Length: 228
Image (cartoon, rainbow, N blue to C red; front, side, top):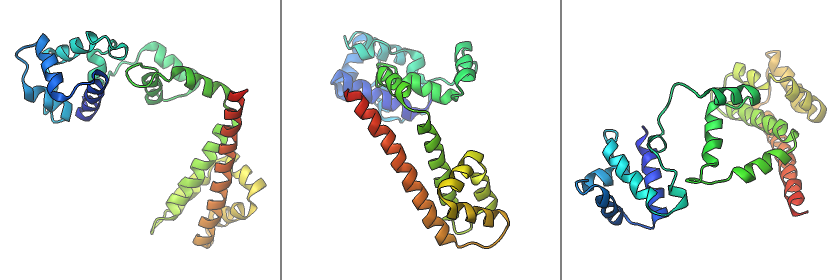
């Protein structure tokens, strides 16, 4: 269990309940008169040295479930503790194999669809369904460009890492068609010849700005489609 995550969740619960820490403690005492002030405050402030007891968690869950707050009706032990379960559910594994998203991303998407946090499931579905596939292509190109720049900006950059970033056939083809100067410099670097580092960084900035513009245009068109 991550104390900071539990602390975040408890602070969110307080916000949803409209309670301060003292009021929340009193609400907990209704279900567990022996619960102590330090127990609740340490959990809220992320100062626990050990995992809260089942009794403490049960008390918190009862406060949530009897609050008449729709977002808090789903609070459970697993949700509060965010246990790292080693055995992944079969349907999650199948989903991962079919669409290629990492388990962490799948977990994040599930969180976005949870009423305790955001309940953004519908709009995420809309966005991903209507977003053109070339959006992710350009996003990948932007990530590659920025990774190259970050490495070159180091005082002691690693040429092998720079070439590894460049090593994407689609990206190189994109550069050869649209940014021949940077593609030519890539060939210079690949052949272990000297190159002008400031010039490369300037050209990469141009590539980055161009790709960002394309990404913004794709989003702009998506927003316009929403208005129709």
